[in-house]
Length: 319
Ligand code: XMP
Image 1 (cartoon, rainbow, N blue to C red):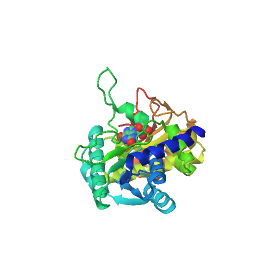
Image 2 (cartoon, helix red, strand yellow):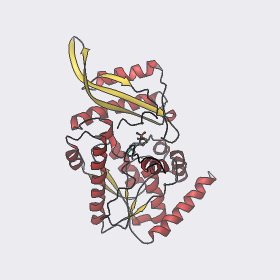
Image 3 (cartoon, helix red, strand yellow):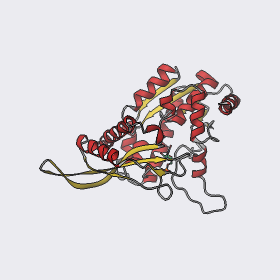
């Protein structure tokens, strides 16, 4: 794609000019955006880049291993794999307000980056995979009321005390353009085609209080759901699909015993930029099969519902 080939050259030149001989630290989440930033920066500045994979304990099943093997082993990018799940889950203990969760997670991310920047002898820049829709959804409407729908932690909010400048090479791009750029940079197709995954991870897919037990339940349900989507050949037709664990228990029956367990909500949407979205119209037989598999295999869930809400008025995530 000539547009992205040109963008790639321009972006690399811009990064080199901005960074000079400085050191850059980049948070790698395993999502498309931060992956593209990492590979672009690695191409632009090589070993001046150190990536940090912050394992906050809110990742999906198998995520950490995949990221480490691609970026450290394949790309030979300097990568620090930091397990800080105790710190994050400790701070989130008893917190149920969605904005508080985001603030705690955002602040903790920054703290970890600061520490890691120190550990490599100081960094001058922090690189982020901020996209254009993040930028516009996070600022108030010009001339209109000041409304923050969700405080995306990867935009703004950098405390003054943090002595790093931002490098945000994707700031003008939409998601589909980031994917084109990723392909241009030679990232594997299964990484480029990945559904978006929010920085706060599973924390915003567990309305109410987060516990390790709930995280385990959600990881299992989510893995089954995505496995079925892939097996049915639907993955690439869907913008984003995930399970949500509701803080509600309902009564069910298993064999001849009464059960009283959590409700799992399944979400799948089509979208072009994440700013508006439609619920994906599954065949009933498909979604019913997924529900049965989840209930039969995941202890802690005895009921599954499907979310048919569009955005607007709903948002894609539940928090
Ligand atoms: P919503 O839920 O606002 O989501 O319709 C739009 C897109 O943004 C992702 N999302 C986030 N990404 N930090 C992120 O990095 C966040 O706090 C966050 N909240 C939502 C969401 O997954 C969807 O792709």
